[in-house]
Image 1: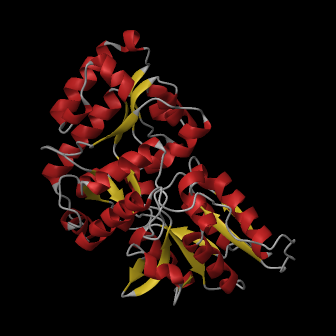
Image 2: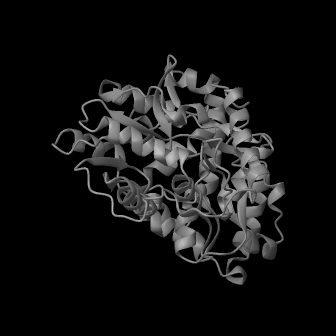
Image 3: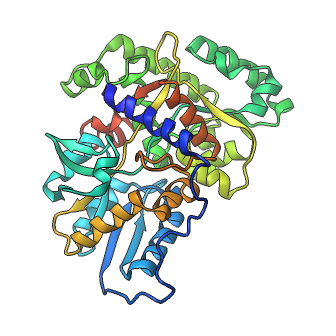
Amino acid sequence: MKAKLAMLMALILAASLFAGCGSKDTGGTDTGGGAVQPTGETVVIYQNKVEIGEPLMAFARKYEAATGVKVDVKTSGGDSPYAENLKAEFQSDRQPDIFVIEGMGGYNTWKSKLTPFEGEEWMGLTDLAFQVDGVVYGFPVAVEAWGMAYNKNILDQAGVDPSTLTSQQAYRAAFEKIDSMKEELGITSVVAIGAGPDLRWVTGLHNFNGYLSAGLEYGDTTVIDKLNAGEADRERLQEYADWVELLFQYADRAVLLTGNYDAQVGQFGTGKSAFVHQGNWIDPWLADNGVDFPMGFAPHASVYGEHDSIFIGAPSFYVLNNESKNLDAARAFLNHMATTEDGHDYMVNQAKMVPAFTNVTLTPDAPLSADVAMWVKEGKAYTWLQNDMPDGFGMGTLG
């Protein structure tokens, strides 16, 4: 796991070193000026990130124009339960060629449907592929991270220095102060967080990851190993419960209990909350809605003690359906994404992601992804482990 943290750092450093050194032409594949004839092949990709749905469809159209292979992008996520909808796709005649799994939990659910990647060019460009017993099954979608995203303007007005937000005591004092100034600051709540049926993944997966890895060295799986063996660290769990209670206490009740993704992120994006419990994947939403105030991440104080890191990892992976009749075309599409200027432009500039590949020389200009790059450079990361829980435990039992 330490090697994975080193890989995350190398990705950011490489992008920084090469930024501005290469051609700015992201025109991509040269089709020779003529129309490419359709091949008759259609690759169906079923993915779980609503934020990248439109950019991915645009990239797919560009790919079709260059190669003649149609790529049909289907998206389920955000307010819609991806895992449940994916199972419905497989129970019908709509099985995708490419779909998404997250961690060992996803692998254990879908392993009978997977076929490995072998000899792909992109495999030599990342150490973050999903592997089981040395066999590569997953193409890393992106490096992602979350912390307590904050509106710097609001914190400045309130006299709160985000660098001091490293413990539950510090957050409690800051929340109390900001809450007492809500009218002056023009906000309706201190924290935008959702725990309703549309946002079970926020509380049941992401927030719970604080119990699993906050304050521990990167790669430390002590807590989740105990959890998966049916054992809880009761003292740590109580500390985590105190954090949840603090977040809920200073949240907007309507957003907390019944709000959807747009309501939660919109509260932050419109300057009506000082913090939002989300990650750098909200960058496309912020860009689409013209949000331009300065922002960044502070650590989650998920348990007692001091915290100096945010949660960083490559949690989502494109995998291949072993019953697909278009496996070669599916492999080619993913390889194109990882190895061409068009693919790099899509990942960084259009989808606002931090790619998991060392050959990408573009750097993110989206505010939260840029902040993630800073945390990665400094080696300040806690492990992303919630996807290694049993399938359904986070979203079903906890969410």
